[in-house]
Each structure stands twice: as C-alpha cells, then as structure tokens.
Amino acid sequence: MRSLYCCRSLEPTTLLPTPAVAARMKLKCLPEDFQVEELSEFEIQGGNYAVYKLTKTSLGTPEAIEAILRRWKIKREHISYGGLKDRHAITQQYVTISRGPRRDLNQQNFTLVYQGQTKQHFGPTDISGNRFHIVIRDLPRNVAQKYVNLRESLLVDRLPNYFDDQRFGSLGASREFIAQPWCAGNYERALWLALAEPNPHDRPDDREEKRILRDNWGNWVDCKAKLAQSSRRSIVTYLCDHPTNFKNAFALIRVDLRGLFLSAYQSYLWNHILAELIRSKVWHERVYEVGLSAQQVAFCTSLTMEEQDELSRVKLPLPSARIDLEGSALEAHYENVLRELGIELRELRVKYPRDSFFSKGERPALIVPHNLQMAMASDEQYSGRYKVTCDFELPRGSYATIVLKRLTLDPTAVSERTHEAAGSSVAVAEEE
Picture (spheres, rainbow, N blue to C red):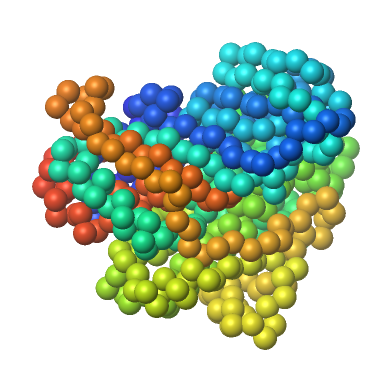
C-alpha cells in the first residue's frame, strides 16, 4: 500500500493508497504546511446575525463549534457555518450566530474574530470556494521537479471531482455505511453502527465506550451502569425504558451527525457513478485506478479534446429518491451503477426522523484548480531533500487532496520515482 507520511501524530487515515508508486514523501510536517481559507462574497451589511471568522489549528470544525457553544452557552440551532474544514491544518472559515456576542473568543486551538452583523445565517451555498496552501516535503530533486512539471497537465486535463477520504470518516471496521440500514428501516443495525462499531478515528474514551456497548448490547441497565456521562449514555438511558424502540433511539443522535451519515453514503455512490462514467468515456490505456478509503476510483493521465469537452459539460446529480432522471442521458447510467451496488434510486430516502434527508443538487464531473502556482526549493526540514509548494483555489465542495492524488500518482512518473524510493520506509498518514 502506498501512503503519504505525516510527520505529526495524526489519527490514521489512508492517503493516496496504490501499489504502483513507492516514493517517500511527507505531508503536514508543520501546521502551516496545510492551510485552507474559505472564500465567500457574503455581505456584512447589518442585521441580527453576528458574523465571525473562525481560525483553527489541529482541530475539527465540529469540535470548535462545540467549544463555542459551551463557552458562550448558545443553543445549537443559533449557530451556522458553511462546511467542515480539515482537522490537521490551519483553516479559516465563517460562522454566524443569531444575536451572538459582538466580541472575539480566544481558545487554545482556535480564535473567533467578530466581523460585523448580517441579515441571515451563513451556510454552504455562501461559500464560493477555498484557497489552499500545501507543502509536500522530503522529496528527491527529480521527483520535486516532476511534480512542478505536471502543473500544465493539471490545468489542461482537469481533475475528476471525487469526494475524498475526509468524507468517509464515519465508515467503521465493517465498511458498512450507517445510512444503508437506516434507509432500509433497520434502526437497530444503524444504531449499533453509529454507537458501537470500532472506527480508526476513535479516541480512547470512544473506544472504551464502544467496547462496553458491544459487550453488553441489549442489556441496557448494565450498559448504563458502566458508561460515563456522554451522548451514548443518554441514548442508552432511553433504551432502559424502551428496550426495543431503536427507531426513536436512533433519532436521539444529533441531527448534524445523522446528516454526516447520509452525506458519506451519498458521496460514496456519487463517486461510483463518476468513476464508471470516466471508465466508459476515456480510452482504457489512459485510465488508472486509485484507492480511496472507501472505494477504487478512476483517474486519467490525459484527455483528448473531445473527452474534455464532453466530460466538462457533465454535472452529476447527487443520488437520492428525490432526483428525476427519466428520459435523460444519465438515467440508464445511474440505474446500471446502482444496480451493481445492490440498490435503486427509490430506496435512497429516509422515512424517519423527518429532520434528516439526502442532499439535493448536482456536482461537476471535472474541476480545474484556479490560480495554481507550484514551486520547488530546498527543504529546510530535511537536509539534502526538496519541497514543493502548491497554492491554488477550488470550487466549493472540492477536495485539495484530489489534486495531490492526481499530482503524486501520475503513472507517467513511476519509473523515475520507484528507483529513487527503493527500500524507503513508507508510513501511513491520514486526513480527517
């Protein structure tokens, strides 16, 4: 397995897995090596909503939001933000709070800086894109030069707009998406996956709570006695009085977490749909496979003008029972891909609770990084080695790590890198 090494102690997520390339490289050695800035034209023009810029380091967006809620004693429904930003990075994003304090907040891993007032909450559609600054370290000179030379192909050929590994953090050891049994009405299985299944991202306290639940599942009184105060214990307390009402127990999971369960499954299906489209449209000798944490997907070494023109016009709807493809060119494609995965569009819906649903919208098949700048230089962290600095912008919802995968896994560079890296120890790194 081929992975990026991360110098800092990170929760393990596989990044860039493939057996084809074995070059050693290091990502996120320093917090400033991976920076994300949210871009928006959101107007600050007065109103009842306080606007803030959240800057965080080595902290996930949900954890920062939880800390803000606790510190200012704010109800969850009063706070809003556009999207989740990488845990293992320095990130900036906007947050709004209904009638929020007109002051700053400074915590150990984040700052919240008051920007002014606005008339509405900030949400995902208010994001126009994200600006990235990424440093790849510990490279031999020829590999660093090869990456820089690939800049033009990134701009000309565009990139498949896959959802990357960060989207699948809720996927546990069984590789079963929580949304699968949820959509099928198997609430006990969905609840077990959400509360008890081991996950590589689990912190020590989570691992112990999940072990207790697995060992005592169904014996809710014993579970409650052994669990410390937590959201899991609150759900178990409900089950002590309603031992088989898994439907209502599942609804007690935070609505934002349930939304992530749906997003992960929907994104997985969308990736399959795009990958099969690329395999069907691009000559197979220019297609190569890359492993994400949840699935194999197709990348291209290059595209003909005809392929570029056709795929660049494609916008794929997010799969759900709410989309209508009847009579469209994509109807048969969606049906065939989903049938191979054992599901139909009409099954992609949530019956309960009614506050959760699959997203509706469409996503371009290909993207191009804007304002892409790449440069190589001596690596001050690793004597005799080189670093490559990448600066670029992507549309809302696109992943910088897809750019890195396309850059570092181009099979045309395999012969140059494999010899250089022979015998190198490759460690496993991870993205949120």
